[in-house]
Length: 73
Image: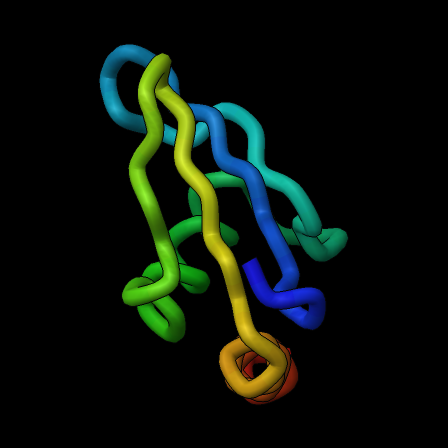
């Protein structure tokens, strides 16, 4: 892992919906935040065992996510 990557952890319910996710902006639900991250930076997501996943976002991808958030606001 590169030192400048931002890691965002995700936990899924048995039906595949997101129950918990890190770094969630105020006003966005867990599933909505996951959907936005997947849309903008899905290539940086890794599925893990036990109903978990992890986004490892380099600075450029994090900037793209922030730009999409600003656009939606």
